[in-house]
Amino acid sequence: MLHIRSAKYLSGFKLWLVFDDGTAGEVDLDGVLTGPVFEVLKNVDIFKKVAVDPELETVVWPNGADLAPEFLKELHQKQIQVS
Image (cartoon, rainbow, N blue to C red; front, side, top):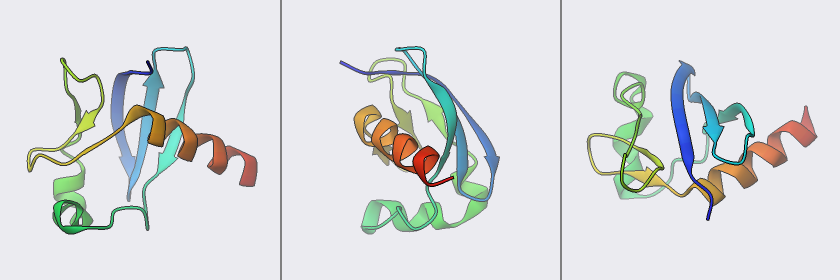
């Protein structure tokens, strides 16, 4: 099972993530934040409050939004292939 070790806000809707498999890199969530729980995260000031949940070991925000590590890893891999 994949976990997030650390998450750091970069700019816009970009995060720097470190996965427990040793992978690290930038993930851009612009255009990915859809659905009611993610609407509030379209405010960058709230998006910046990203954290890693110590139990779930994934990224979370104060409003209860979270994203699965597997989703984030897949997105990261797609984004590095495009760049």
